[in-house]
Length: 58
Image (cartoon, rainbow, N blue to C red; front, side, top):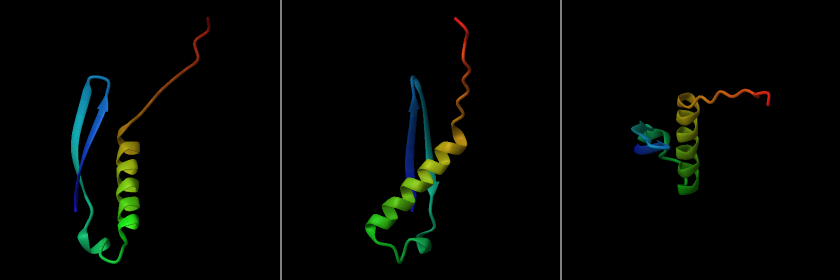
């Protein structure tokens, strides 16, 4: 199964296709497949996005 992901931050856009092997989904219900897809997308985004911050004195 291929999942097209579109990540947008402000004016920037990134399109990517994630793959999950079909045999890993065969015995799963629709709800379980949806959960697997959400986890796969979240893991991909967590690996891609980095946010740094610091407190500035006024």
